[in-house]
Length: 92
Image (tube, rainbow, N blue to C red; front, side, top):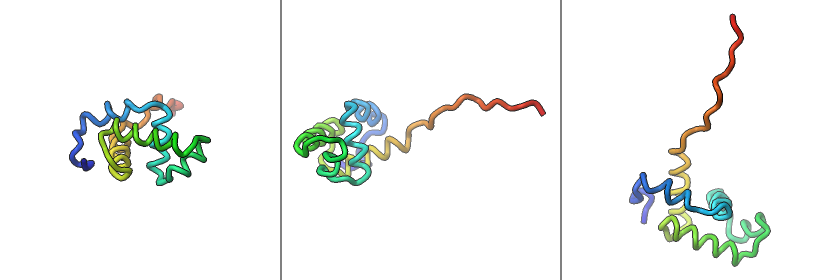
């Protein structure tokens, strides 16, 4: 499955189905870190990271890191920016 083949409206539902830990792992995957580097960063075994990666792939419906990263970045690009309260202005 290529990123272009993924239906856009299904993407947020699928990606938000990740657990907190899977989201942390996916964010680190998106920065280009290896399973070993992720394991060290999160104080996990490499096998545990590999299990998380496999569950992420299943939830995203992908079979490679490149496709998972593409979906992740595509979703991030379409998220609404954070909303801030209106700025208070002093009277002129």
